[in-house]
Length: 541
Image (cartoon, rainbow, N blue to C red; front, side, top):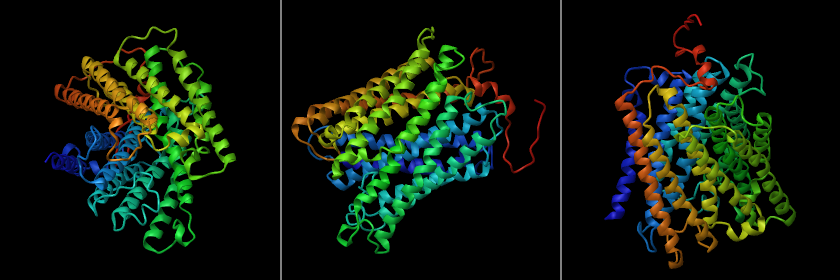
């Protein structure tokens, strides 16, 4: 009975997200042309709404996963259902929460204001880019509901995806990836043109905000890596439907080619998710310390560029176990360790910026320190996994799961929460409850660490990932981890309460007396609302 309750709960959340996305015109009823809006602020708000409801859906899936792994034995009684839940959870977190919130939300809202331009280069393309994402989410939901779901994980390896999943479920997932990929490529072109052509004439590249640099390098990585993924999944689609044999070893194909193509996209995707968070943290530290610039700004810019460059040439450290030769393993081990240098430069620059200042004890300082701690811890475990000899032992264990959750899930999500606390009053002109934000930080920080830190030890014991059941020796670590996930969910409910209270109380900010407000506030007077469906009216600046 409890299993059916979980499934019904998941389907209810999915239905609510679907209805909420389709009824945005009703929610924002003050603007009958909301679906046609091209103002970058309106599009950014749409991304925030979409990311919020996708976050509810992804979190509900993670609750089901942790409840299944609380103790040995089967709760769902269906391994395919469990695999499909893991797959949907990963895809939603990556493609429908972090990327839309970071690049689409904060990028659309803040970047034009920082560089002093009235809007994105191609506003109507920006609108089209957003509406491709709900289509992709609907296709993902349909792929979950067709033919017992899709349990291929987000890596979608053949031959599991060709021979192991017959029917239309994988085809729907491929179309979903194409829709999300087209959306990201359109956004990448838009942001690159905006930063290159529309920034203020007085704003040179070396004096440009680190947040803008992070978005710029991020969208460049998107433009570089996404066509490779699109080609790989298109070939996979022909293998499934047109009798080609590119990845079929029984007919002369090689499935390892797909793995190389996928991870050439997959590892830059890691930095696509985390680089905008780097920019938010760099931007926030300036506001916290009151300094004119971060310690070593030019070094941070080159560190961002080096991260983007080296991140494109280390993809094979994800597939050490497929039998690549010793020289290749040595190269990818060395290159992966080298990428820790520019990342360390950024962390030391942040700490040096905080050093010597007298920052006011506030929630934003806690979010910055929490992000630095979580990302540094995840980076240290990444250095261990960079060694091919150790990675072969720890591959596909929960040690790897803990590593990428600390770096991506926790690092990127903490970056989103930092951006929300930083720009909430600027975007919505409303106050957030300070005491509630403190409580929310401590609950979520405690919860995520209790959830994922014990899984390092489970991984060292050899606990494999993606298994619906496990031996009794791993029970204690899983029980602690499931308890931590419940604490995290409690923190999420508190966050929803904080957002609702902010809207219901409607405490407007009439005057902002902050001395160091940031470049986005100082240049916001030069922007105006528009839809590009009517003539533009300029009022005296």
